Image (cartoon, rainbow, N blue to C red; front, top):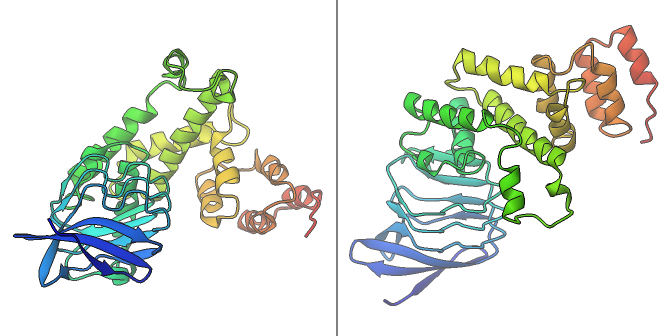
Length: 313
């Protein structure tokens, strides 16, 4: 089969012409954002071929046309910079590992045919944005490929299955899998990963990230599940038996205000741990410290704790 090429802004798409349409077979280039054309040589682009975008390490945003009906094995695997995938809201046949090792993927938006390109992202409703984050997490945190259903994503039954998978992961014992990891030699002997306390801490951080993701994208979330997630976060915040909730926010979202607002709104930062939170922040994140003080009304005892810290700007 003859291979054809068409130029992108910073690269080249390779494709083959079939009787029923065009299959994209490869890509090389340095595009950060790429909009796949609806048609090539007056034929619809219907298939993203096997490994077509494998290892496209600079690609961050990818937009698929309404004409796509199939995505083959490992089509977008190892796209390590990919954060956003936009595709049509329809049934799409998919192969295995299509988004394997896309660790930065944060959004898979399934949009109707009348919206395309950047406009498809800009016109998302609040609920659609939340569902796009949950769909991306299904492929990453949940490791639930069966939830890759662009047509069903956001429906009541789909959200129930998403939550069921989440709860099954949260219910696992923190030490589960540690012995197996050691027996299989998955980590280097003597590394910190071989330490049980470290392993448990990492499992708890995973659970914290997952619980926060769902609570911050809470469309269709049952009240009882909400309370269970909040209880877990509060049990592991600053001053608790372990502090993974606070550690995840401080170390991974140090200057992202929405996370501090989330902790304040859900009693994960409170009167009992406020001074300790400020102390942990040290001389970093001064803007977030000011935000916390203002948000909590700058009561005298908190002002005293805040003033005791030094700020070298």
